[in-house]
Amino acid sequence: MKTSLARRGLLGLIGSCCLWGATGACGGDDADDGVVTIGFLRHDNPNYRKADNEFFAEYMASHPKVKIKDVTVDFRSLAAMLTGDLKRDAFNFDLVLIPPSRVCAYAAHLAEVPPAVGTLATLQNDFYRAPLQGSICGGKLYGLPVEYNLEYGGVVVNLDKFAAKFAPRTPGWATWTEFIEDAKALTEYDDTGKPMANGLDIDPEWSEPVKHIFFSLILQHGGTYWTEGGLFNFDTQAARDSLTTMVSWVVDHKIMHKEIVPTANTNVVTRLAAGATGHGWGDPKKPLAVMGYLGTWGVPSTIEQLPP
Image: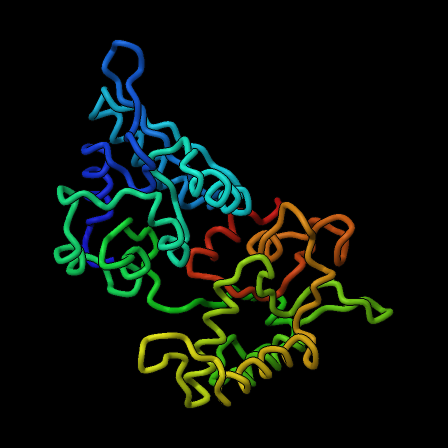
């Protein structure tokens, strides 16, 4: 992020009572005391929640006629509520945290960012182009970014396990081939050869990593995924080679075994931080993954979930 606009923007949104994610009237009056209640829905990222709560408390302290009621759910539940409620205009929140790649799918059910908060022309000077572009649909702005990553993802590494395998070498790779070879070597097995922990965990329930890795590999193979008309085109040799490469990571190099991944109450962050009864080592203190592919937010989230 280039400036402190996120805070100024949210103040403007709340002050104007027309929030990103509004499906109609914004907020509601509590009885006759004139208090406006704002409903906010987010997924369960502990760092987002901490920052939100601190800001909301500060805002409500200086605006006693505004009450913010926030609700936190797991990511799957959030996705289900967006599809089941928001798309039916039966959404009971004024503000919602939506993954940027999904905003335009719900644009018909969202309010545009009010001019009092900023116009598309002015906000392009305050936010990096790529994050802001995710909230622009048909030339209209439907939200403000809360993530400002310039990369398409990163890797969280268990340094103790990496050092035990490769010391004195530290993590760092010049090519995908080098990286995948390390992930293969870091995959853990018991004495019978049964996989216990994935060398690299790419969340099977989170589509963004696979999508962006695929796009990047196409470029690295010398291709492009756009047509001259601005449409996706994956019927190219570069795309086929990229997909073949990605499949080989699992099929041939066996960097990840999906049977280790629990089917509920899990994500790549929790698997990096801890184990689960009935999966992998079966010990909550033994993580199910040695490395994990995720955004830069993942480091503090992983640390906060480490078992005592």
